[in-house]
Length: 283
Ligand code: PAF
Image 1 (cartoon, rainbow, N blue to C red):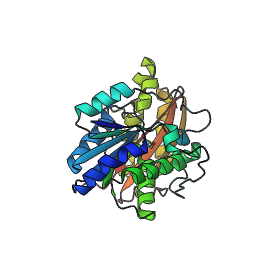
Image 2: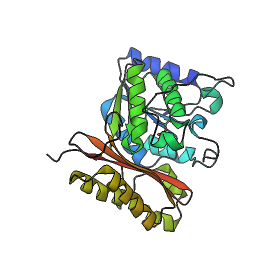
Image 3: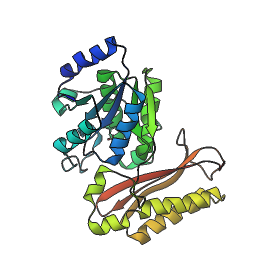
């Protein structure tokens, strides 16, 4: 497995693969890799001849007062996991390699970036879209794999790829969960044992809400009931619980049979957890 810490170090290997006609998949990550990330890597390995994983804790997607400085970092552990999976190349830029000191250009995907996580994290998607575009331009992969746990992020990236004519496939991978339903996330490491015990209530409440929505209940009432369940379970505050259409994230009054997504974000102590579930008409 090769390592590249600067963008010039990427070029020779990528050029050689391209000359040989080998397909390349990119899995962008912020490190602190868990089984969810590893599932994305395994998916990439089945879809392309070569797999590149990037590890970069992107300062541009953290707001003031957010957890950029304490975000978990474990380079040695990450590299061991990726080597064991047969990854070909890991790109580990630092902030200086990614952003010039006078960097002033940003990618904004309008509408999709607003609301949900974009409401409480106003520059988050601008930071994500910008860094993902830079990674895509540097690696020029045939496909890139993103997890559905960050569902709004997935749609923002998809729309950017379409709108800016980037020639690659964006592959979505379903949420990977602990046996008790908690969606895997690097931020789960922040949870105290008591918070970890409470955390699966997010998934359970969404499952409960999905059943009510499939029965035809109004979204507003169901989302309010999910929020109440979360607070009852021990969540400190609920950021949002919403039913949206699965492609454009337009708010829905009720499930109408077309693909939809039930999404939530809530605080357990100081940790903000997100999760979402798909809704579709039973076959
Ligand atoms: O999902 C993440 O880990 C990050 O938002 C991403 C896509 C790697 C961009 O920094």
